[in-house]
Length: 202
View (tube, rainbow, N blue to C red):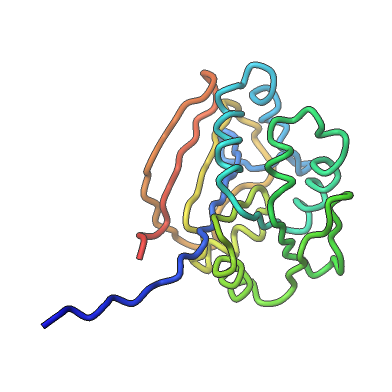
C-alpha cells in the first residue's frame, strides 16, 4: 500500500533581530544614540561591513518601531547614504513601521513603508506569511521587547562593542527567553557577534 503524500507547508519568513550593545549591556546611550559603536564601524571595519551586507542581501523586508523609522528614514533613502555599502540593499527591502503615531511613513523618493498600528502578534505573523524571505529588525527596542515576549523572534544577533558606557537604555525582554548559541564571530579585532536561535525549526 502506497504512502499518502505529505502535506505541503508554505515556507514563512523568519524574523531576525540584530542589536548592537555595549559590553555592559546598553543598547543606546542616554540620548538614544549608539555612540559606543562609532569607533568600531566604517573605516577599517571591513569584516563587519561585509557581514552586514550579506545579512541584508538575504532579507526581503524589515520591520521598525516609530523612533527607529524616523532615524533610518532621515538617512538611508537620502543622498547622505550614497557612499554606504549597505544602502542599495537596505533601500530595496519591503518596509513595515509599527506605530500608533504615524499615519504615513514615506521613505524619501523610494515610496512608502506600510504602517502597522493593530495587534503586533497578528501583524508580524501576517508579514512572515507574506514574505518570500526573512525579515530583519534593528534597534526598535520597545517593539523587539514585545516581539520577544510574543515568541515571534526566530533569530537574535547580538553585536557587542568593546566599550562600557555606564548608563542608557538596556536591551532585553519582559520575561525569560531561552537562547541557543549557534555561532560567535569576532570582527576586526573589536566587535563580537553572537547568533542565537530562539526556537527549533518546525
